[in-house]
Figure (cartoon, rainbow over the protein chains, first blue to last red):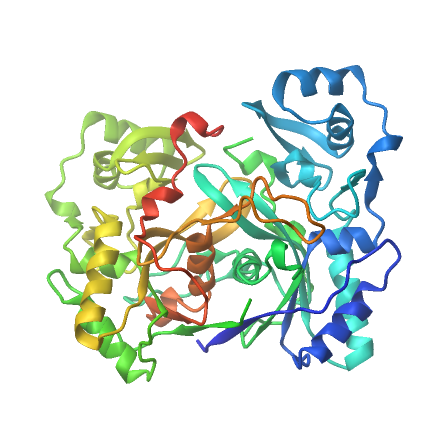
Length: 251
Length: 251
């Protein structure tokens, strides 16, 4: 193994629907003298991707259903219109207790509030949804970087989630392009020669967590560059990180 | 934010009960020309800590209880003696299904098989348990490094866990010394001036995941050094990463 480094990527302005995010990222990389180089990994926070793609909802346009009103009254201190938006992104409620709403989204992520977010939004009336297809978003960003710089980078789109059993938030990979999100070491042997039966590493999640350490909301840094991590090129697919319901003990 | 780097730490020999692990790590850092420097974070895999501390059990000395035999027959293809060892580390079975045994340990970790591990063990007859008190282990390692090098490093002891809902394994922080495992950003404001109500980052878990990317079992690299991450010194306590049962929706 070799060393790798993680660089915050400053210089990205407030992003609005329709903005060319790939272009903004490429310019920010150049301004920060971060290349890119082939084999870099560009990590981008979901919020700016969703904003650029127009995945935002104006609260003032939402009429809450009776169920949304009921949940708002029962389980949280949220605006019933925000609950309505969360439900519109939800295929299954996994837990609804103590003010928390943990749900499964259409693509199969399990997270609080279907990833619908009020922080870092454009204004008080705006909610930000998760990107519709983060793998496609990641592929588009990688393609834009390739066209503008002739460099092949992998792209990981991340969001910040809580975890069962543990305190605090960590960044996870939603969309992945240009590398395999899972690193399958089965068949390799450990140090003492024993075969590693269960070792499939969620490397894209670990890279997302590593990048999250330099992507601070308060400092307006929605992206990071990871350099020197020796991944193999692959088709990507953050969706591969989702455990199928039939193999999951916690749904 | 500034950049940080993650370095694999090679050169650590097979560790045996009673070995001076802090000394071995210090020598490996020197051999790898990795200092240490003040403000570095030394990340160490739980297995070598447990081995050095003698937290190993010989299967041949274990007599399985009827319950352990019953579980072995019902739920897994495991040796009933290994199940007996897992149960001896267990205070509560969280899930027992489809060949998996997810339990809560005495200190409150929730993980598969109580963290009891057969891979990278000393021989086929040996199981490795989690360290008895990983925060104390981390503190001792930090103290040894301080005495030998006059440098103040933080230490994180990690283990590799699966996660609900998601495929693949990621490294998590068990024991933490010299830095706060949680980074509390509540009260700070996001980019658009909105207060961050829910933002407590599990920075020690993210650092563990980052280090895990260079700690490959197959290559015998049980430690890593993280340099340049601007943590504040603190008393540590990986135990702070554990959510109390009464606030947990998934136990």
